[in-house]
Length: 157
Image (cartoon, rainbow, N blue to C red; front, side, top):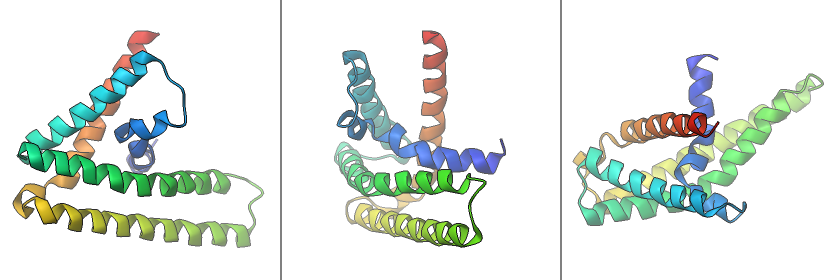
C-alpha cells in the first residue's frame, strides 16, 4: 500500500477514530468499549491541549467545535467511501466514472468548506499562534491512536 493511499485511508477512518461517541448511537457495544470511547475523548482533549498549549477553557472549546464539525463531516466521509467502493467495480462505464469523479470533487469541496468554517470558529476563542500547528497535531494524534488500537487488537487475539 502506498503512502498516499494509506493517508487517504487514514482520512476516511479519522472520524470513526476521533468521534466514537457518534458510532455508539448506531452500534451496541459493551461496557468496556464505552470506557475506551470515553478514554479516547479524554486523550484527544488532553493531547491537543498539551501539544497546542491550550488552557482548559480553550481545550473544551476546541473539543466541542471539533465534535460539531465532525457531525457534518461523517456523512460526507461515508459517502466518499461509498464512491470509492463504486469505482472499484470493473463494470463501471465511462459516464458512471465521470459522475463518480464529479461527486467526489463536490464532497471534497464540502469537506474543505467545513474545515475552513471550523478554523474560523476556532479562531474566535483560540489565538492563532496556538492553532498554527493544529493540522500536524491532528495527524499525529491519529497516528498514535491507530498504533495504540493496533496494539490493543493484537493483545486481544
